[in-house]
Each structure stands twice: as structure tokens, then as C-alpha cells.
Length: 119
Image (cartoon, rainbow, N blue to C red; front, side, top):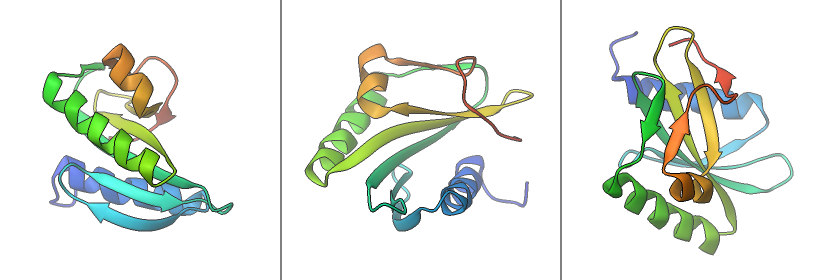
């Protein structure tokens, strides 16, 4: 890595990924790592970003509460809200899951699709 923390690096990488897919980044916040973007058709998106080591994530109550807050903000702003987790295991990937679904199942796995991501 180039000296930045894994989450900071992933935020930058995700911004580049979105821009390559015709998104305009509107807002970046650090706590929690949240990006707001619009695609080429004007649809709004809110991205909640996490980095983890290993193959899966069991969301704890603090994380679920933070996701619920962001889901409410996204709904109010007419945005689609996604949780994006970068898994750092060898052959890692980034998995984007609708935030409401993540709250419902409380679990995100790396073996269910995802975007190949070089950790």
C-alpha cells in the first residue's frame, strides 16, 4: 500500500471505480466511510464502505444502527443505499449488498459473487 490505512485506500479505489462507471461523486465522509454519488442517468446512491480481513462479516449492533441511520438518510434523499465490504483474504473481492438487506440478514459473505478486488 502507499502508506494510507486500508479503509482510506479502499475509499479512494471505490471513488475511482464509480467514476469509471459514470458516477459523479457528490460527498465523501469519513465516519463512517460514506460516499454519495449520482450515475449518468441521475439516480442517487449512498455507499457505506468497510474493509475486513477474512471471508465474512457478522454485523454487530453498532454497525446495524449506523446502517439503519444511513438507510433513513438515503430514503429521505431518494437514494439507493448499499453496504460495500472489501474482503482482504487472498483473491479478495468487494461485495455490494443493498443496505436494507444487510440489516435484515446481519451477515455478508465474500463467496456470494462480488467484484474481484486486488487487496
